[in-house]
Length: 282
Image 1 (tube, rainbow, N blue to C red):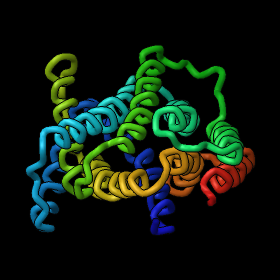
Image 2: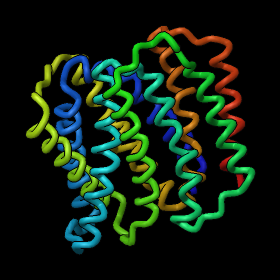
Image 3: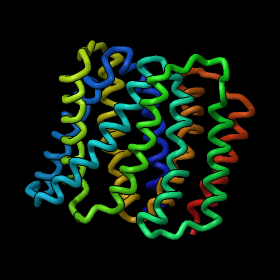
């Protein structure tokens, strides 16, 4: 594993939280995600052609990659975007999704046959405690019920997607696999639009900048790194780095959006960092 990849992933993935709000302020969440993954699919298609990778795959690999995209780009991102769009506090949504490493560790043993050590469990628990301190619990916050449901669906989806991706039988090049996953995500959101939503996008300057960031840096950059990490490491170790996302996002919000960063946030960041180190070190 290239050791700098997790660091790059954390920075890029965390930055997505800063650009999500400007996107849903100018569009409905499903139209935005359909738009995003339409261009992501085109990008990975062109890269595959440029790299002389064949995009013709067998039926099993096709179905596996499409379903992985539906889980990750569809249910996970769709759940997060939708919950925030109807008033779910971003911090609470992020904290719920941050439970992913706990679920993955619990399931990777019986499903993947991975050995999850006591040391990893200690690291995961420290990571969750640190993330909770960073995000905090605003007891007075009015959390919409459907937002809570959507976020829980997102949590289940990203956990299932991580384990599913690890179990995939294909050995496709990352660009080809990512192409079909982006197609699966795009088709999922188009289907949601047809059945449930009233799509709209206001192509403001803010929307274009935020969407360009999520397409280029998050979908092309961070997601490709995530697929590489899952493929080359245990699922339980890979997802442990997700505990650094809320703390890093909070720091970025303080740096770029002038949001408040308290001493408790800094303490949580340190605890989370220690937890991730314990959970992922060999």
